[in-house]
Length: 324
Image 1 (cartoon, rainbow, N blue to C red):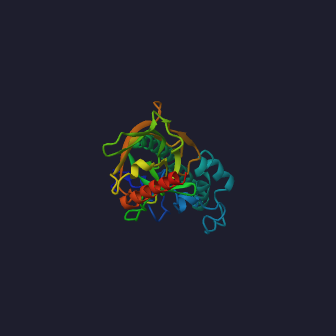
Image 2: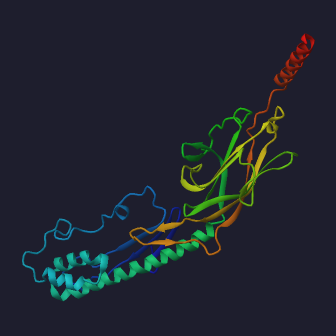
Image 3: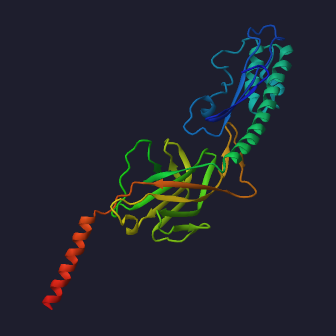
């Protein structure tokens, strides 16, 4: 990080890193003339560990992280509290440093450093909100669509290279999932969804948000989904029953699922170390994004078995007639 570039942004995961370096060179007894204040701001912190998440940054007032306070204090605790009283969440750390310095002529310099830190933290919070909102809106119409399967209350995408079971007249539930490219974005609902196989007429399941075939189509919005990279999202999932017409040949043609979904930002977002939440729905509501998925794992009926069944049916019918 260069001196004139105190802010860096990373895309995967979406993290903003802010660094400030307070100057203590005017304080003679300080052996380290510069320190570094670091802010790590992100909304993608599921499963993260460490000081920022577990809030272990603050030193214990009264022991200064295990180092005892001077035994001959020149600055009392009351004086330190009065000097640092306006620093909000930084007050305890400021009081600790003022008591450790134990020199009235340096109290103002220490308070000033914490004042700059507090102001920077406020600026970081504002900047991170703006950037997060702008970034999320840029991602709202970008989606991934893929085959998936239901596992308890969660839908899971097939892992790359996984062997998928054949779709047959007995195993005839086809599932598709749609997720955003960022966990800051959610799939709210299917807006259109249809199936097409070869030259056959299209099979419309959802039209303008309405489920047209409820008996053979189940759709879910803002559903827990683990994508093909095992990342947890809130997305859309559909379970589609395929009738016998999809398996009417020994080698059924590929089925293409296509349609659109309504995407929007997550309802509430929380910034690290900031208890305030921000609603970031757009004024225009969710955006529509289109998708299509090809499915080529249908297994058709064997003609010999089918013909034998038909022949047996004819013979049985003929026998029944002759008996009558």
